[in-house]
Length: 179
Image (cartoon, rainbow, N blue to C red; front, side, top):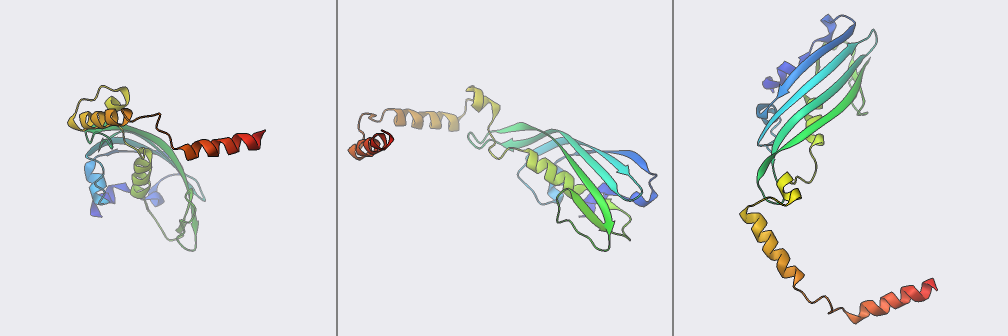
């Protein structure tokens, strides 16, 4: 992962106080993680790195977009992403990342690589179900959408009055119990 050396922050040489680090994330960043769900991306990361005498306080903020394929129409679109994440870095005898908000680094460590935290923040900012905005507002014109609409029309033409009589008996049990 030599491409991620840019995200190493050598905190030993930094003075106490706040320091600002800014990154622009594109597709090559995700390729370093072998993550291919995004067609493209342009995400701006602002990292406020606060060094104190006994700990480090990192506050990540992301804004931008990732280009993904719609789950409904398979058309690609730019999905806006934004988010915040805070991380406290303490020092101890051994590395420990069991807590998602607190990281313990060994005393002898002199730098921290923030790429994993940026990666997770961006990936988790993308909705699980990716739906193109034109699908939501009904203006999408594609072969997939036309096929879905034709299938939906067939479902609407089913006879609604043809209900299984067993359901009526079950409904009767519910109303008898409530009275």
